[in-house]
Image (cartoon, rainbow, N blue to C red; front, top):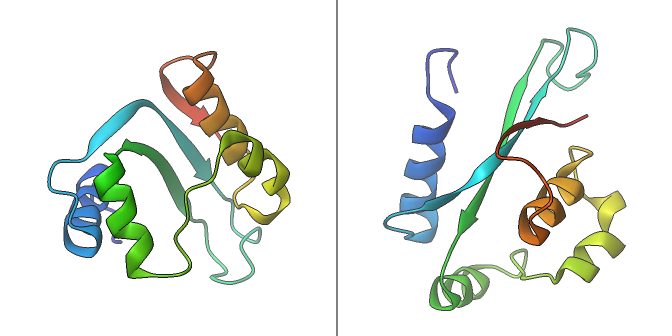
Length: 111
């Protein structure tokens, strides 16, 4: 993405084009990660990341799973068990807090 591109618009377009989710329903909380120069060895520049929670139907979830073996539905317990496999840090807390209702609305900083 370029610096003037909207994260939300890009995510919506991606969901529509890649997964055929026509009208994504975003959660009220989202994750933000902003690196500093030198932290990101892959790009050697500061990077920004947004993690959105999107509510989809069971049918949409099944269709996404059929598209690729890399897409799977995990329970909260499975998500917690596999937390060390997920980047950036903090996504498991973001998702569990959203699903369980104890995380406040708005942006949450991820590390």
